[in-house]
Length: 143
Image (cartoon, rainbow, N blue to C red; front, side, top):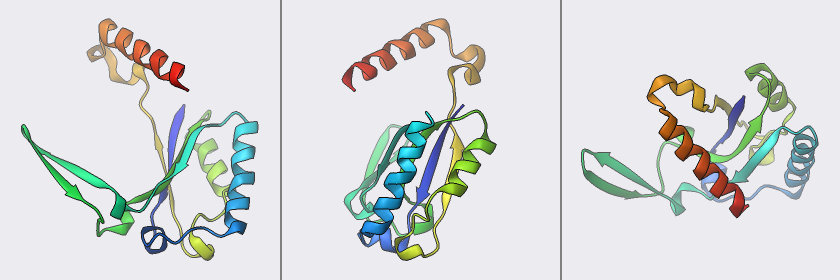
């Protein structure tokens, strides 16, 4: 099972406050544990929403909205992609994670399971499965 583990944004992360050397060191050690255990597939921190944009869809119309975005609690400051046996295992790993908030303030991490091909049922036709496999192979070549 794959899970996206989402580090929620805070006022500090949105203000561009960088983590301390101590937090970076702790996160580096945690990431090493994840890699050694074969759990971590990917992970990155994200720039504040002031450097981002959203594209709103309404029928065929597209509207671009530049950041910053006001609802900090709905924003993401970073993420991991993990391969684990269950949601419970993902939760146990998150409980071991250093507090991602600057200066140990209140932080939050969300865990969301990633859809797998078999989750889509008959609508995910053999042709669509073949296309998915081909695209994944192309992405793997770029790594």
